[in-house]
Amino acid sequence: MTPTEVATYQDDHIFIDSEGFIVKVSGQLIELTATEYRLLNCLVANRGRLLTHRQILQSVWGFEYIDDVDYVRLYIWRLRHKIEPNPQKPQYITVVNGLGYRWSK
Image (cartoon, rainbow, N blue to C red; front, side, top):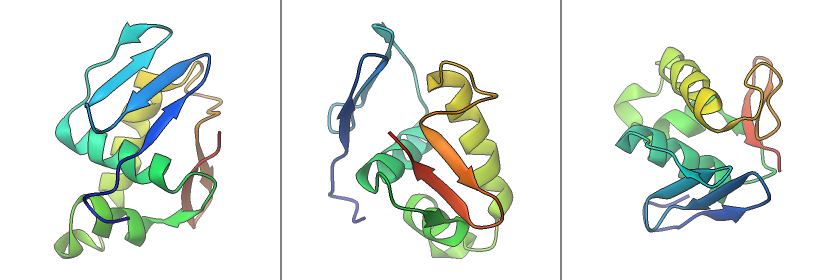
């Protein structure tokens, strides 16, 4: 995904307009940091596709962070707690252990 690509997604639970930096969960506006927006945009723009930790790091943080996997884990955790109906049983941001994450909806 290039920085100019825009991800938009909507269902009964969540509305995402990455161009307008708007995320609503159950109709409530959710505040995200700039990094959380970039991560969410990366996942939604590649929905259904498994993204490795390295692909996410390069897209969201830049090449110099390519080995800092903990950044991905921390920000995925933060996003899940903001957008998932049940963060312990994620429906949107799912993991393939040891490989990466995908936007599954």
